[in-house]
Length: 163
Image 1 (tube, rainbow, N blue to C red):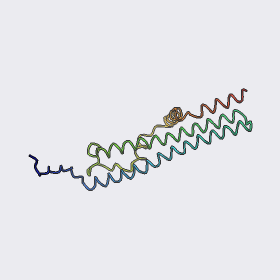
Image 2 (cartoon, one colour):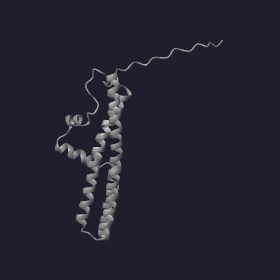
Image 3 (cartoon, rainbow, N blue to C red):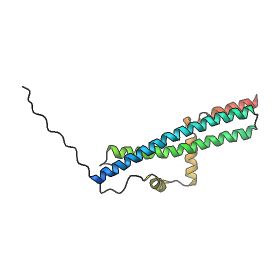
Image 4 (cartoon, one colour):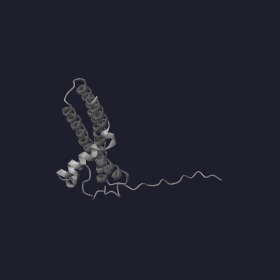
């Protein structure tokens, strides 16, 4: 026989006001970093499009092949640097997401030290030396999604100069 009794609501653990402030700050930081992350992607696409236009211009005007290749390589490395900045934002986004998914496990509580808005201070403590930075830029430039279209443009330009 059915009863009209309702089950008692399960109470969620109360969150301290300071923890809510930290979570709100992290949410704002996440929104800002995510917007910037997407802008990095848009500007990387503009660098690629500019490179294609530059390659076509160099071929059309028969500009010195070494100069043209150096310009394309410079833009390729510039995109690698740009993608490194984007990757740093992506790492911070993942840290924030993990903290927001499980606040107690990730130290978001009233007694925890400030966690939000620590993008640069965190990076400053983990910053590699000059060689490490250069290697990071090069490794990002060698990712397949960054290598395209530069490898193709270099091949096209080299074929054009040979033929």
